[in-house]
Structure formats: C-alpha cells, structure tokens
Amino acid sequence: MDGKAYSNDLRERVAASVTGGRSCRETATLFGVSAASAVKWAPRLRATGSAASKPLGRSQPRKLESERGWLLARLEAKPDLTIRALAAELAARGVVAHHVSVWRIVRARDLSFNRNTVRRRARPRGCRPQAPALEGVAAPA
Image (cartoon, rainbow, N blue to C red; front, top):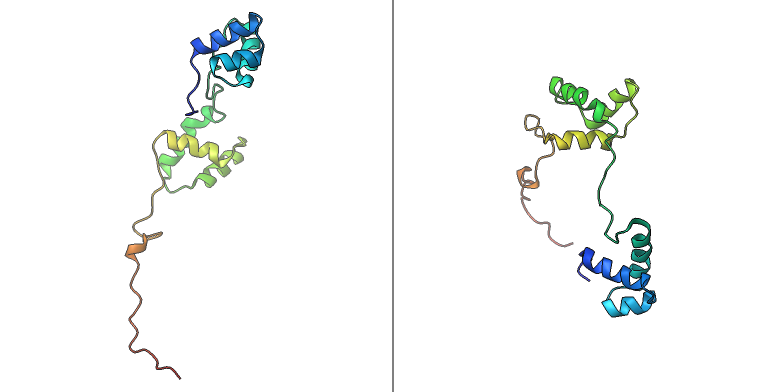
C-alpha cells in the first residue's frame, strides 16, 4: 500500500456489499481491501448513509486566538522577547498557555527568531577561528 486513502466509490461498494449480506472477509477478498476496512465501513454506511472517510485535521479554534493581537503587539514593541518569556507574560495576565501554543501564533505570522549577528552568537562551524598550528611534533621516547 502506498499510503493513499481509498476512494469513496470503493468504500461505498464495499460497505454496500457487506450490508447486502456478504461477510466482511469475503467482501474484503473480493475488492482487495483489508477485512478491518470492510468491518469499519459497513457500520459507517448504516449510521450515516455514507462510507466516506471522516475529514482530517484540526477543527477546533486555537486556545490563544483571542490573545493573538496582544502577542503580536508585544513582539512588535519588544522584538527580542523569547517564546518562553511571552508564555510567562501571558501567565501573568491569567492566560495559562504552553510555549508551543505561543510559537504557533508567531510561526503563522512568519516571524522568526534568527541568530544575533551583532554578538556573533551561534555561528556556523566554518566561521570559527582556526586552532594554531603545532610548531613541532615530539619525538617518540
């Protein structure tokens, strides 16, 4: 299997076959799907009238959606704040949130926390100074 979802047409035909009286295993062999799929699709067809897959993804609103404006304004006023510091400030305001939730809002706005080039913090490997060369190699004892 290549990781793709089965088509809704196949789902409907498999579920209809099972509800029509065939066993799940027999139907699965006939259509080339797993028996577990046939077992799941038939009750879904009976309950909802469709064997289509359920929608994927997040459907509930973000917890910090109401704080988005404050967070972005705070970052604009003081751009050197860390994500954890922003989460701590939210906690001081009475909003308990994990720093990852704060990061999602910042990332959705395409803001990033890049390296500080003024202080040369966290430089890449190639920018480090070379170690001094040895003057001579000691002779074996």
